[in-house]
Figure 1 (cartoon, one colour):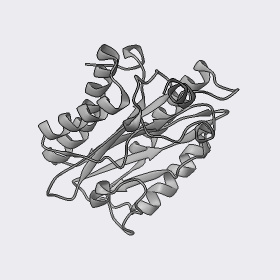
Figure 2 (cartoon, one colour):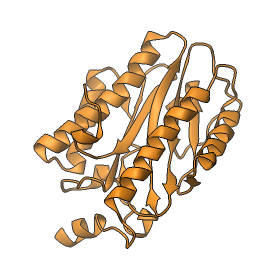
Figure 3 (spheres, rainbow, N blue to C red):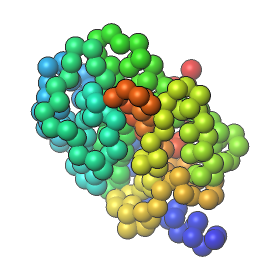
Length: 229
C-alpha cells in the first residue's frame, strides 16, 4: 500500500512549487475575468468560445480537459456529460466555470459558480459549494483525513445544507503536465492523507428536486493561499 500511495503522489521532472502556484493564480484570475464577461442572453456555446479565447489571450494553453461553462439546468450535469445545446442564460440564473489550462509546464485547474439577477436559492447553492470546499479543506488540514474521509465528510456537509453531492466529480491529481502520466485515480478513492499541492478537491452539489446545481474546485492548500472568513 505504501508503494501505491507514494506513486500516486509522484511528480514529473518539471514540477515546481512556484510554477504550480503561478498556474493556480492565473487560472483563478481567468475564472474571474471570464465570469465578468458572461451576460444574460448569452448562449452557453458562445460563452465557452469566449472563455477559450480569453484563456489564450491571457497566455494560458487549453489542455487536459475541455473548458466548460454550464448555464441553468446544465449545471446539474456531470462533467463528462455533454451540455444540452442552446441553453440561454436568463436574467435570474446560475452558471459555473470549469477549466484546466496549462501555464508553461504546470497544470492549472479551477472552477466556481456565479449568479446573475436575483434568486436566493441559486445564490445559496453557489455559496454552499465554496463553503463545503473550505469545510472539507479544514478537515484535511486539522485532522489529516484521507481522501476517502474527505468525500464522506463532503457528502454529510451537502446533505446538511439540503443538497446532493455528485460523486462523478471525485477530485484528482494535479502536477507538472501531464499528471495523467503519473496517476489517474480519484481523490475520493485515495486511502491516505493527501499532500498539499498534489490534489484538486472538487465539490459539485445539486438540488434534489429542481434543475440546478453549483460547482467549486481548487487545489488543496493551507490557509495562507486563501482569504478565509
